[in-house]
Length: 336
Image 1 (cartoon, rainbow, N blue to C red):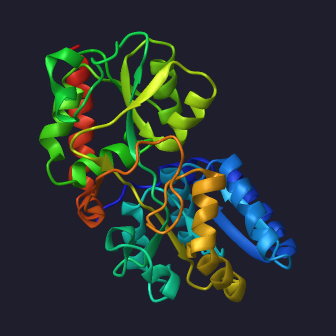
Image 2 (image 1 turned 45 degrees about the vertical axis):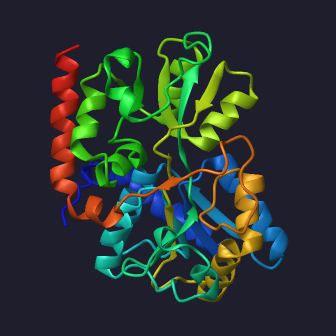
């Protein structure tokens, strides 16, 4: 398995040293260290629920984007650091690397983990999806009239939508493209169809959502919680239901091997996976869960046919996948 080199660590040794120092201080005053790729606000909501459930546990969090958090943890472990308790990030293919290195503990044997469907956990890599956000197609309601909205993923590669799409940069927010690369019926052919149909590539999902909300572009694909947040703020966007189904992207969650607060880590981990904990995820954090026995998130088309990807395939083909994406993003840009 090949992963990108973490060159940023060498370029920022001072910042990393400062982080390690602050991390040490943080560990002394808390009894649970939790790295998470939830947004700061969403992680705050989850931590509040944890500390209400367990008054004797004091949680300290570090939050960052999924790929960035994966890179940070790998860099720390490589440097002999990374002594944390719970780890959650949305860059699920990266978890297979952590498992190969022996950096994560076994978790799928817990009764709470067994309540998750097979696509929402992985016994080989030892992760369970803390959340399972859905990828939704959204459109601008001024530019796309009633009845003209996209109705399938397939049609987004057709001339009707040429130069009307905006999509996220796969090297900053990987979930969308990881799904298409690893899902049956999509793959490289579909990715090329999107890119060569004049898709504008933006840094993050928030940026692509804003381009659609302002009417600069007509359609994008984002996680449901991003779409719902903008809709609730009055943005002129709507979610379009796709006939193929709804992509679901489970975001890996586990206990770190050698966790300094192992008992607390297991207690909190199992609670988050429980029906009570996953209800907090859907109703308070407002992100979809892989569990079918919890209330669903209000605002997204429901029920839906879930579409899944082979995350291990994406992990094992990282070098090929990254080269493919780099090549075709550049070539598609030249043809605009």
